[in-house]
Amino acid sequence: MSSPTERPFHVAIIGCGVTGLLLAIGLRARGVPFTVYERAAGISEFGAGIGLSPNAEVAMKLLDPAIHAAFKEAVTPNGLDYFQWIDGYTTNEQIFQLYLGKDGFQGGRRSEILGAWAPLADSAHIQFGRELVAIVDNPTRPIELRFADSTTATADVVIGADGVWSRTRSLLYGNAYRATYSHHYCFRAVVPMEAAVAALGEDRSSTRYMYNGPGAHAITYPVAKGAMLNVLVVIGDPNPWRPEVTGNTVAGIDPSFREKDTDTEVTALPSQDNAVANRQTTGKGQREDAEKAFAGWLAGAQGIVSLLPEQPDRWAIFDMLENPVPSYSRGRVALAGDAAHASGPHLGAGAAFGIEDALALATVLEAVHKNNIAGKDANIPAALGAYNKIRYDRTQWLIKASREAVDMFQWKDPTRGQGWQGFGDEITSRFHSIWNYDLEKMQTEVLTLYEVAAKGATEQR
Image (tube, rainbow, N blue to C red; front, side):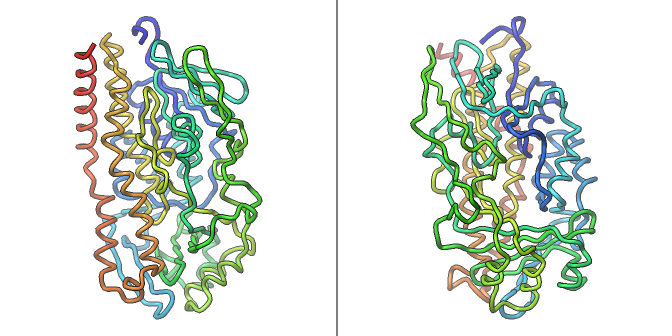
């Protein structure tokens, strides 16, 4: 690696979603040089709702207190500080409620929250319209990044935070490590509060509710400071995902396309999935599909379905359960967020775990940067290996736990369906495992792992 007098340490972040953006802000707060490369033309998330759990808020504060302050300005206050589950099929009565903590698990429209965070990143260090096609990681020189527009860039470390259809992941491990259909899809909508109250009543529109029942469930909560109601309807689907439903193929990438660099192999993928990140799994659906799924349910749940437009966006839920990557790091390249461990949304923790990843990476990369400034051996593979060790088991657990949660919500197990007495204990255990995580301890542990690994690597030379 070049000495600090020849070239400063530099981080390349691929992707400017929640994980990539907050990692950039965290690095900026620590004085670590970075550039974000995003294939889209700008930060253009859709307006559906997102909630962020208590552990995510702690991670925000540790990354940069300004992140948390901006989040709190953008979110909608809770009607009640509880998750509340309703039997939407037989009684319309509450099954269970779980306390979130004071002002816990607040949310809002995803676009508004990202818009509040964006000014905290230095726009001069974010490049849009840059679609990654190849990575050349030769240990004797900086990593080379190649983009679809024939431009190149260099970095000392690359973090792939480019989502469920991560190009970075495919470049590291090949196309076998791809997300697969979880056999659930969802419809999302954000509707004016007046329409929501007319369909559901003031009480059921004022705070967060989930309606459980056979083969489907629905979630509602206020966003836009109470002016709108976010609606999410999730439907179980025993069939394979059918691309013709959306008119888009699923992640069409030719695994045979490879080229050889003079020093190291480069996997270069053709640009067949170069639209928005979820292109392969979204498209227009039909409200009547939701009406069929909720046929026989009570009026409350059917009222939620009635709020959907006639042709709502249909989102297939893909995750990494079947094809987990063996490691989140390889050489001087690492994966974070959905690129590493895409999971279903059923425990509301996917974005939160990406923020935890960003905190772990910002913590250990700051140490690498300081070593580089001091002229010490800034062992990047050791740092990324420490990140992998501290994040792998927890994040892989989430993927499985999210699948288990949706089965509980949709009464998939006949022994755990309507009136199942153990529901509260089971769901509480999963949520508390997510929320009650010591992030300051995580920071200490990732630094210790890095120091031990870097020392061991030095001694072996």
